[in-house]
Length: 389
Image 1 (spheres, helix red, strand yellow):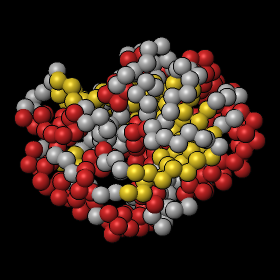
Image 2: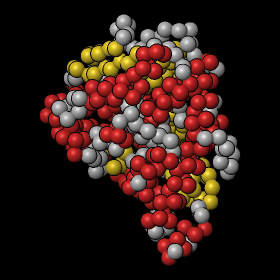
Image 3: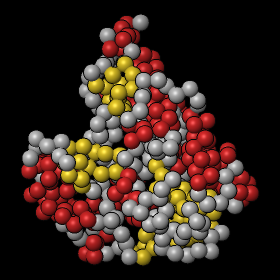
Image 4: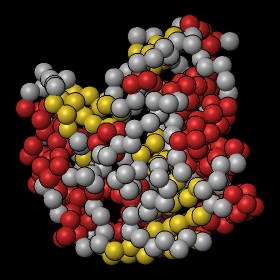
């Protein structure tokens, strides 16, 4: 397995015609100059996207995950998991614990939002739940848990123009994730190594992120997986350049994991549609709206589980009351939401056509991946027969 020296660019990019861009700001600006060009979000997992999706993998999600976990352990001496206690990262952790894999480090990098009064106990909650549920296993296997918080933030140091992002090595999808504070408060558990970047202990090092759940749409009567450019985790900022970044649920070495999760989600969504008697809708976002309303049920069907029920609910999301309070606190303390608005109107609105801007959220609309057909939507659902049963 070859290590990637440029992990951020290697894993995802944007295509405009035949040109490759590192972020959606630059891609959208280039596309608006000639809207006849192809515009596509590319996740670099060819063994997954180019394979046959028409047959559901026969193994269970847990079996597929455990096989991949053992494979990772056979390839790397030093394994770091980006751990938030949420559904993605805790599902990864559960597999490593089931397999008894040693020498694993759990790393939580908090955002500025985690410093807010509404979220100040989040790390303690995760750590308490972590050691309550998995404590003896973690200690026996020698796991360590490291939490890192931003403590210093000066918005003036990080002001950039849209053009700067194309060559930045620390970009995210939204500009705010490209801002790196100049110092961190590092709280560590049983880890004597106090460095800004995750140190490379072994000969072979990897950093695992639980990214991301299948996003469903319906196209031409088919259930399809189609991801859209979204927030890329800021844990990339900590990655040792010699380490390999692994998106656990979308990897060339384990393509059946994402397929199985997608099939499980489709079957669960169809079950919900029949039970709730939802009318079939050809809107490409309809399937995801069904999923959002029945998030926990679908989550369970896909095999995901957070360490604590609180973290299953997405309670800290911006649209939740706690998230709104965090938003206001951040603005009062740092003022970067005001800068966000200034940036939007100074840079984006002058370079990108307004119909592809999301003015409500002051960003660009997501760039879509090429849809991957999985299976036909059941005929009773397409014909709305389930409504009358």
